[in-house]
Image (cartoon, rainbow, N blue to C red; front, side, top):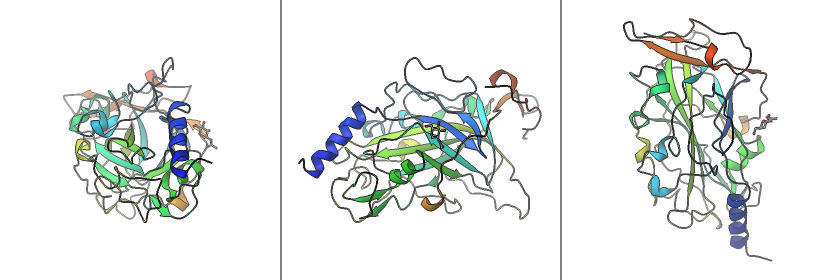
Length: 317
Ligand SMILES: *[C@@H]1O[C@H](CO)[C@@H](O)[C@H](O)[C@H]1NC(C)=O
C-alpha cells in the first residue's frame, strides 16, 4: 500500500493530468444565469458572457512565480468582456465552477474591485488599475481532523465544502456597496503540491457585475468601506498558507493575502448550497456618453436567448 504522501502525490498528479483543473462555468443571481468563460480550445464561448477571458487552455493555474505579475489579477492574459451581471447590493452571487478535483485542497477566496472612470464600466477597465477588497476567505479553511472528501490527514478543507455543493460557492455583495460596475474575483488556491516552494496553484476567475441599489432602502445601508489592495501584492511564495505540506496533520491554516473587510459577510459553510438556474439573464452592457457621463445598457447584441431587452434601468451619475 502506498504511503499517505505517495497517494496524495498520485491524486494530485492524476488530478492535474487527467481531470485537468477548472474554470468558471457560470454565476447565478437569484437563480438567473450569466455565463463564465471556458478557456479550453475549440469552445465557442457565449458572446454575452460576464466571465473574463483567459489563455490557460489547459484549464490550469497561475503559480507563485507570477504572484507579482498581471497574470495573478484575472488569470493568464485575463481580459474583460463588455457584459455585466446585474445584482442588487445585499444579494448573493452563486459562483459555479466547472467541477473541482478532490485532491486540490485549499482556500476559496472572493475579492471585489470597482471599475472607476472607464468608458464601459468594467468592459474597458485596465486590470492593473483594479484595487481590491476581500469579501470572503472561506474561514475556517481547514477543520483539523474532520473528514474531508478524500481523507486528507489534515482534515476537512473549504474545497471539500465547495465540492459537496456541486463545486459552487456563494458570495454576498455588501448591502452598502455603492452602485456601479465591479469586478468580482473568485479564487481557489490548490495546495496539493504546495510542500515545495512554487508548488501552490492559484485559480483566479474574474466576472463583471453591475451593482444596483439594495432591494429595500429600509434600513438605509451603511456605506461599505472599500480597501485598495493590488492583486500583485496579495501573496508571497513563502506565506504560511502558500508554502505548506497538506499531507501532514495540521493544527490550522493561515489564509494568505489581505484580511476580509470588517463589513463583509461571508456565507458560512453551513449556509452554502447548490443551485439550479431558472432562467437566462440579460446582462448589462454599458456604453459611455462622454458628454453626460451616464451609462446606458444595450441588451440586444449580447443576449443568449430571447429574453426581454432591459433598457434605461441602469444609470449612474
Ligand atoms: C452542477 O454544476 C454544473 C456545472 O458545472 C451545472 O451544469 C449543473 O446544473 C449543476 N447542478 C446543480 C444541481 O446545481
